[in-house]
Image 1 (cartoon, rainbow, N blue to C red):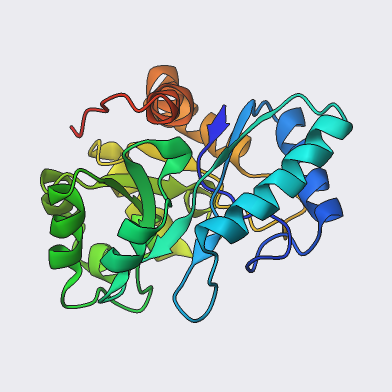
Image 2: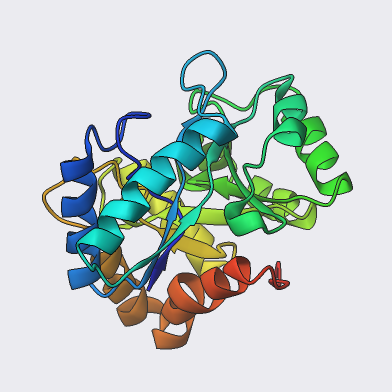
Length: 239
């Protein structure tokens, strides 16, 4: 499996608080069958100012320890970028793209979409970015109106749902929305969004649940095939 959404870089956001925590989580993921991990620390203006130089420094720090301990995993750089009104300027001046591809992981306000969200996403797509909206099942706008998901996908936005959503970690409404998106084929990636604060790493459990309910091929598409295409900057079908 390939996990494209994690908060494992040490001491830079609300994820791993130190190097030891990072290594412990990585070993847990390997034991669960993960071979490749995308490190996506938050970039939230004036909250988590993880600019490219910060991410690079933390990445090298973690990568050196992984090599030192001979841990069999491949790490990739990325970020989870919070979309606010002027974020495009930061995206253009930084390199938040996953593994230098066209794909970029984004999130927005969990209390409600900003009025200019469609404008921001349009600007990204127009400038050859491929935005992946993190945990769409958690946004009230989509919970209340799941058909909005299809509209966003038609606007060339990819969807990544959280493993924890499928097993009720964020409540029944989020879980119901996640399953609804899956059943309609409106999901492109399944990831953990791990913040290194759970005893259990949830991605393999969610993989098994999808495999049981929707088939092995679909589970593999979300956890292996599409993530591999992302890392290689290949095109991924929206529908």
